Amino acid sequence: MERHFDENLQALKHQLIKMSAMSEVMISDAVKSLVERNQAMFAPVWQREEQVNQLQIEIDETCLTLIALHQPAAGDLRFIMGAAKTNAELERLADEAVNIVQKSEHLLKEPPLKSFEIIPEMAVIAQGMVCDSLHSFVNRNVALAREVLLRDDRLDELRNMISAELSAFMVRDPGSVSRALDLLLISRYLERIGDHATNIAEITIFVVEGRDVRHHSDHKVRQASSR
Amino acid sequence: MKPEMVITVKDLNLYYGDFHALKAVPMEVKRHHITALIGPSGCGKSTLLRTLNRMNDTIPSVRVTGTVLLDGCNIYSPGTDVCELRKRVGMVFQRPNPFPLSIYDNVAFGLRVAGITDRHRVEGIVERSLKGAWLWDHLKDKLDQSALELPLDQQQRLCVARLLAVEPEVILMDEPCSALDPLSTARIEELMLDLKAQYTIVIVTHNMQQAARISDYSGYMLLGEMIEFGVTAGIFTSPRDKRTQDYVSGRYG
Image (cartoon, rainbow over all chains, first blue to last red; front, side):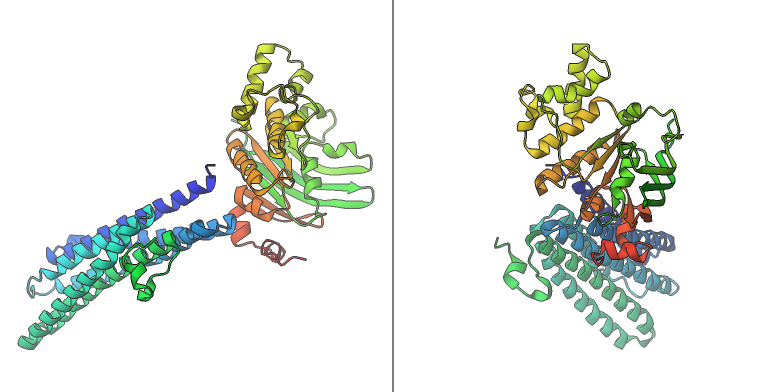
């Protein structure tokens, strides 16, 4: 039997997709502002942040109402709880994009330090992780979720590389310290975005399989579907 | 354009002899929405429901003051045609109560009372009504079968079909699922959500979760008073009155 309740769940998915799409554009614009030294990218990020904040409130309200009115059980309950947690992850990763813009605003006032190709590469990976983790969530695709988990390692690796490079740079040229620190922080924000996407992927596995894979609690389940 | 509110209840008092059963109750019923009345046994919710098509008239000791406006006209004003009123505001009861007739004759009953005899027309309305109550596909080949042989939830939906045949504006439902198992209940609930596109529904239910699941507006009643009335999501997530809070969170009594 078709349930009217399923339409509500579908609407919740659409809210999350909208929020995720906005966050992805924010990440891309934030990094573009830095790489292309383009101040015009700042304003859209700030604007989208307000919209994301508004969506966060709306999605929480939807989840609260669905739980209160429908007393969901089993998979429905896991989905709504997962949606509320994913909502929080999306809002925080959008905040990281704002953090990047803040540093970028600062950096654009000074001459470019050096073109760091690692930053755009990190941004592409992080953005892809956000997109795919959210898709895995709304489409109940655990294979994709597990693939997202693996990509996080590459992001950590790149972050360590840039960290080493920037440290060396600071030693060579003390005048560059403030700019290098900003870049270091930006790489940290991108890595955090990957962490939020990882959390969404873990939430997906919990929602679909009912198994908690956070904190590497179960390596087997985390890495491969055994069900 | 018909007004947004089908029914407006103002300052409604009802007495069973000396007993003051409804105390200055207000309520508004919005067109094409489901309004639920909840509250503990004896709070007056069924009494209130029955005032909406003057079912309480049949009880001799009952006295009513205040107004119940149906599309702007007070149904308690002298000269109201009560039969016509009950056609416009139909009722489904707790226990399915099909007549001891065939499925077809149950649905056609109201039409015959209304003097519609054209066979072709009656057949068309019976089919449409059974479809409206999600019964046509099950029953189209056994319309001559006795309605009493149907399972309970189909009997209840047949009672809905019997109402639909006379094209009511408002459907009142008094605990329509309390005799049904959870799956049958779910079917009636889905049917109600389907029906609200064309009709307006007021339901009394003991089952708070049912009110939460299907209604758009809810009224919480206690000892004959309307304690709180509002959007269902608000009543169940952040009620304003402490007594409503206690009831919906299961702390009452």
